[in-house]
Image 1 (cartoon, helix red, strand yellow):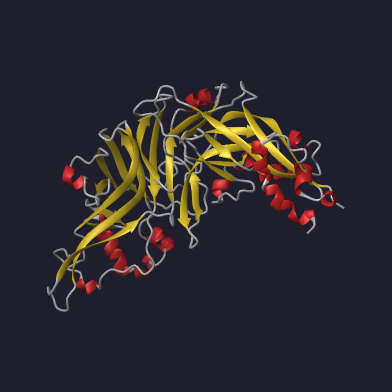
Image 2 (cartoon, one colour):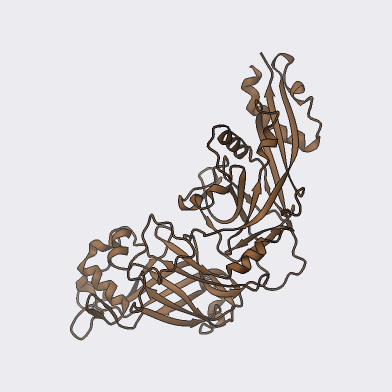
Length: 482
């Protein structure tokens, strides 16, 4: 078989050789016959970096964030509120109307009660800090297909008015109303619960609670419950949970749930078998969930101006921008193949950790600088050609991108073809949340990705004052056969 047919297979193995021995001049001749020679060489280049402050961040996220905390590194107060819509399951049904036993004095169907639970698995800060939130029912839904950023405020944009239905709640993340024995059971789920039992008025009709409104709407218009679009536009436009007070904790809400409770007859005759039941809708990835953030951007600009290192800091939007030396890499190698390009980005260890030190970003996305907003707006996933994921390694104390050769080649050819922008050779590192699934072959694949809006922070080696701190190692191959 000609060496050109073996080129990709051989080149894929070259990184193992270069990691053990920098002398690669004879690798090609040792792997292939003299008549079909493959030359393999390696080189190392300096990489420069700096911190940038993103103008805006895509607000759509896997989780909702609610609370107000002080960043211990910057003393900046970060406030988070979030909006969620609710998903209606295909085939959603309630019992036949004549079986509903929860009725008012006039015989009209009512819900016994209604509530929202904001469930969370993790949080930042003091679980006993007293916080306040207000749950607003949206007047108008936020629409799919619109790129909402974290500075989008539904109240200021007219989606919520001063006359909108709302419910206030003071809470601590450790629910003091639940017993220790209850909280210690395996089935207990941490949550912030808000009752929706006060009267609700819509289109001139007043209902005794919000659950009654949902139930009567269902029996009048079951078609509204058959798709998310109809449900959101005709029943529940969404809820906006606004932080209205307190300082010290931020909850990472994974599943908002709205419940309504009622009694119905499950038997065949009146009062034969009355059952207390509930029905619910959940905020899921099938519908919109967005976060609204506020903080001190002037303070963040001061941090970004620190030239002694670079930062990854969320939800502040401080990211690391790296300039790849594409022209240097390709000079003299215009006809060669860039097989591997490896860059390791060490983390600077925090010398003064505390109980409330921010967590480290675990998963970091590398994308072209020009794609910083569009990548998330278009719900893209890493393709390992022009976008890559690195997971923090405690062993190396770094983020390793093992092979970004696709990025190098794409940037170089964009430049040659005249399609390059002013940022043609720049990439940005962005902390992200990943949702994965296991395939039938037991391999794991990424099925969802979003900007990490939890409280994370780390400093990275590099910055304008350290132009030689970061290196990229490149391995080339060249076919010299007939």
